[in-house]
Image 1 (cartoon, rainbow, N blue to C red):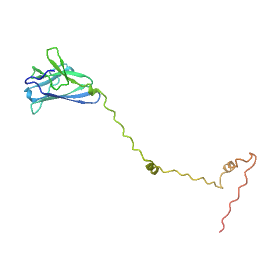
Image 2: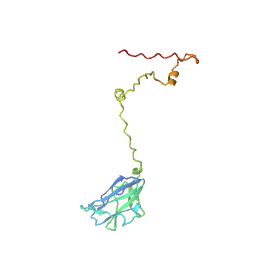
Image 3: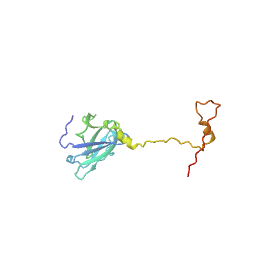
Image 4: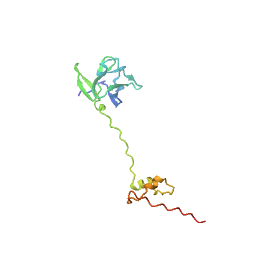
Length: 179
């Protein structure tokens, strides 16, 4: 792994997952590099020196946040003052490039994995005692038969053991209460 040389960019990369397979990556360059301008160039912007210009902070450091597709790794380097290329010495990895140097790599493969599914909170289980108190029991009273029932209902109340042609015994007249 290459080591930073004198005046090398002290940098930091902050990654955060977004919705729909995207990730926000914040690139920062330490003010100690002594640069007047900084740009992050990489595979996502076709190594453009104009696409992701970094903003200078009050402390003289630089930063920019870029939205990238999660699920892959990207090569990148910092272009300082329009002519000096430097690596991010806290990058996830380094890969040799065709110019005799190494490119920094930011790896977003871990951010592409699905977020854990939200779990439903299980409903609190009631104790048997609480269930008894919470559930009122339905009590049904036996139906009182009325002497004023319709004739069809009265004839349906025949004795089950009686012969089919036998009629039910006559109903007793209701007694009148004495005054």
